[in-house]
Length: 330
Image (tube, rainbow, N blue to C red; front, side, top):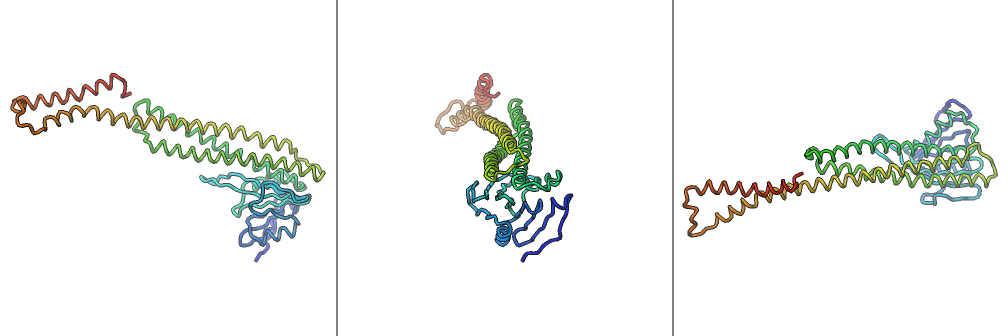
């Protein structure tokens, strides 16, 4: 069922030799001289093959984010990735032993792992240990999240401009340019952005914990790593204030949009209230003079019709003048 594709060599024959095995639901890539086994997809045959070749037991779905099985540490992390205009969550399982690191990712792939591979190839790091490879993976995931949060921050700039335009239109009596649907659409976009930021913060907390477990795994093995794991933890945690800042900005925009929506709805209700107040006296006159009395002196008066017209106009203008003087039309 599986077949080997031609060997691909990039920059370093020792560092980046990929041996792909295509199956129904995934493939295997061997990097860094076989010390990094990258399993794309969840084909059971490939999972069994990787476990036999490496001797590393891969975690089953639903296992805790961190677990230790002898000299093997299992880490489960996640990241939010952007694909054109859509976003998706990607779950990555990592198993680290003294000789091998195995990563399991969805069939569609993972941009963060691609970034880690590119960086390692660029820096000719063909002799990285499994600990150093795992650190590079965690660093790439953190950098991808930071880039995503930066793009979301740029998106809030556009929404701030739109919200300012809405508020300005309400002040300059041009509220017809923006309807309630415009405000609610922006509010839905902000809600989606807030959900993304919540997922990013959750993944960053797990990622920082994964880096700590990786440092503890290094102490258990009693080895040394060229990667400064303490600095890696600091880099991961440094992204959290950035997420908090963008999240606070989104919350502020949500409150501002709620304010604009309330003002818009109040304006609509105010218009109907003023129209009702203006036509109420006219309706009173028409109701009174439409009564079927046997004798009504004004009906026989020659100037009755012009008088009723003038009275209707006066009674309609009086509430309008009162409303304008009270400032209710502003």
